[in-house]
Image (tube, rainbow, N blue to C red; front, side, top):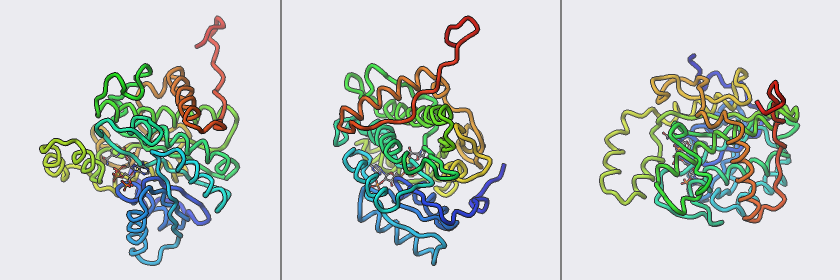
Length: 326
Ligand SMILES: NC(=O)c1ccc[n+]([C@@H]2O[C@H](COP(=O)([O-])OP(=O)(O)OC[C@H]3O[C@@H](n4cnc5c(N)ncnc54)[C@H](OP(=O)(O)O)[C@@H]3O)[C@@H](O)[C@H]2O)c1
């Protein structure tokens, strides 16, 4: 399937929030939605970089859509809650939430709320944002939540007994776990929305390997002199950020994309190519693991102060022929 930005349906009248829109896939996602007429909120933690992104997007010419910056630091739940309140006060609605921002393979650091930074930013911050914005998405025709995962989901494992890597930390394991959590939550949210008959859709997408600031920032933080050089050498093998953004744009806008779908490049190993539906990691299809992660994550968010957080109820368990669970 060859699906390009030219296939994005008209987004006039739609309001989209793209997290992590200062660079890479988020910037390209914002650009494409803006060109198709959406009002795009750039969810960014750094005002200077957000202004630079805004200027770059507007330098393309007079776009049919409009742009605004929404201050949002996913590593600070107070900031996440404030962003959700601002969005509610200023707009009172949302059509597209693209949970795109991310950090990769950092040495162990903590978020403002004391969570391991990759789990806290990539997973918990986005889960909190999604649940806080659900009331604005519900009831909007064609509304979607797209969560950006990674091929790293396939080697990810949920260490339920050590989610914050307190006992044992490996920066790549922590990244894989956070990206597995992204796809598990996207699919669990869809199961819960479907169980209550909601038309709101939750989908997941991964970009393959795309040339962005992600690898550069990760290598710079590694403290290893060789990593930045390797990133520079391997960069020409990766696809462009614009190509990497296509699966998430497909999930966000293609009429054929389905709730619970997981979209990725169609090339060898899902590393590059045109968007297509792809099987997610097995854990994301495991109802028990997904429910367990949902419950643990909500518990952590409540402990961190988001006490009135709630979300759709779990889908009912399917009984087997003998009355046991299927
Ligand atoms: N590029 C790839 O090959 C690849 C592969 C698989 C998955 N992904 C996923 O794609 C997504 C986008 O990454 P990218 O490749 O476009 O990387 P990128 O160019 O580094 O962009 C990451 C974005 O996330 C933002 N961000 C980081 N921490 C944040 C926080 N605490 N609060 C708010 N925003 C924050 C960054 O903002 P600042 O400018 O402030 O740092 C930046 O805008 C990530 O979820 C990543 O895991 C990428």
